[in-house]
Image (tube, rainbow, N blue to C red; front, side):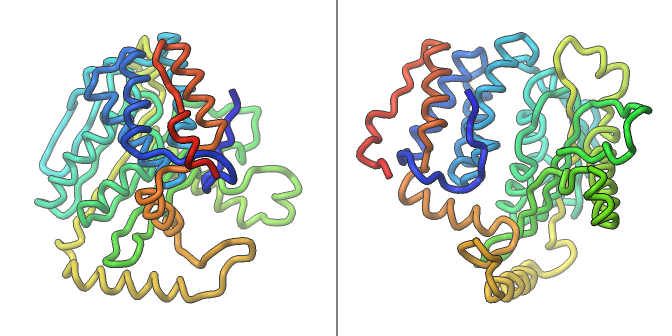
Length: 332
């Protein structure tokens, strides 16, 4: 089933409480073979992304995850381990499972480290997709920290291909907390400008910048974590992805209240600027998601019929009763 992976509220659908969506997602992954605790964490992350209207990295990912587990490509019950650790560094092994488990739990640990040392970082490897890069920067923000997140997957550059094919969708996120205003959260794929001859002729500088961005993300999120090493390449799992996540505790560099006030002023100045044509409001990166999340916490998560049908289909395949009839009164 092909899902509309747009990341803004659907025009038509139903509204569903966060807790109910979480329960559906958790049941699906438990039935697929995950532990209760892993399925609970995954459901929390995916349901919250839907709550922010980041559907591409919420319920939009569920069919793929269930497929790779069903096909034996991804370990449904990984034994996530710490490979190496120091006061400000952490190396995680995902044991062939989804990347959420080493990366989320690893980020929780480096947040604690950053509170002590000012800056802490982790690399992770031997895992599959880690989801939205912004999952981890937003987690840092919840603890009054700055977050940086990069990920890449193992691909090989072909000598017969143009160097511009280095551009791909490997993700990057940078998150900076604020006080009363929305934090600034850049959360995107690195493929900001696809290569073709016309684009290069019209925007050569922009294309070179896109190449530099993608190469940097792949170097930090794939090469640095070691996903090309023999130990990882020979895994029986489709564990072809890695991550690099950094947490900075601003209180080691400045007064947190002062930073929050300065960030609030910065965000408010941006909000007072002219709106981009076709948009509803003037916001910085991450501002729309905060606006939508606040509304959806109160009113329920808007779910398009396509996303509901997808979950129902996966439920039928797994023998899990997934019904949305109870939410028909919320239809819009």
